[in-house]
Amino acid sequence: MSSPITSEVAAYTLRLYVAGQSPKSVAAIRNLKKLCEQLPQPYEVQIVDLSVNPALAQRDEIVAVPTLVRSLPPPIKRIIGDLSNTDRVLLGLDLLLDADGANG
Image (tube, rainbow, N blue to C red; front, side, top):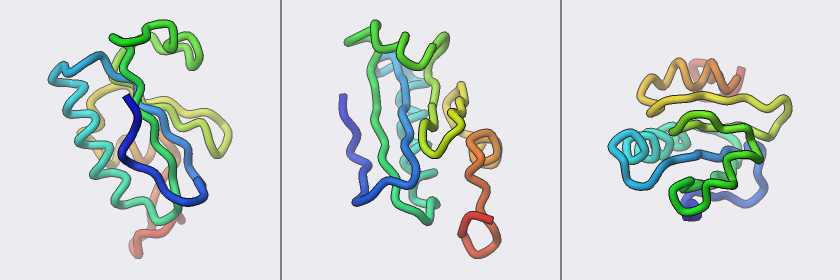
């Protein structure tokens, strides 16, 4: 499954690991789309369905789904869950935005 979310030159590279169409996976995809609308810089998102290809979990050492991995910029950051707590996701992935919506 590839992502409908891309931009020209990625400042952020995000990869969301899901397991089919489970409720948590569907919620994580929906919440990630909302989150990406807040990102001021270009980004690239991949959605990886581990029910289709479970071997891909080894690449980023995925132990639970859904898991969001920010691989660029370094260092690699991971968030596990449905991404419903936007503040926690932004903090955990070091994507904090200032009051104007820009990275601060």
